Length: 166
Image (tube, rainbow, N blue to C red; front, side):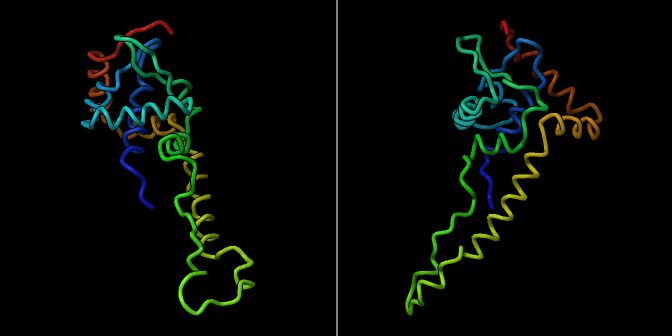
């Protein structure tokens, strides 16, 4: 299974937004600059996150994005589903019923065992992502940070955070 680059960008952007002060927002351009990614590509994912209720959008020249929920209420699964959609990664096209020398349709009455195994694996994968919140990620990062990561983020926010009314 390959998860698109947009998921990584979305998770990091949501994590960055969790560091904003009350009433603060960051523009898509600032988030893209911090992560060294394309603003237009990131904007597509920020809009998806906003549509999913993970981010609030503040319009206008001093606008930007901020979290719509507390970090403990945002799971990694929420972010993945907002960006990638809810369709399963594996989609069975029933190719077992194609090709030469067909067999009886009665042999296909049961669901495809390959599809069943893939969907079982996806349920496990999704359950793990659902158990991990943005707050959990922050706690784990704090445990390994020697202060460099926090200093970098704080310095960036000091320059780029826009203050708005909540």
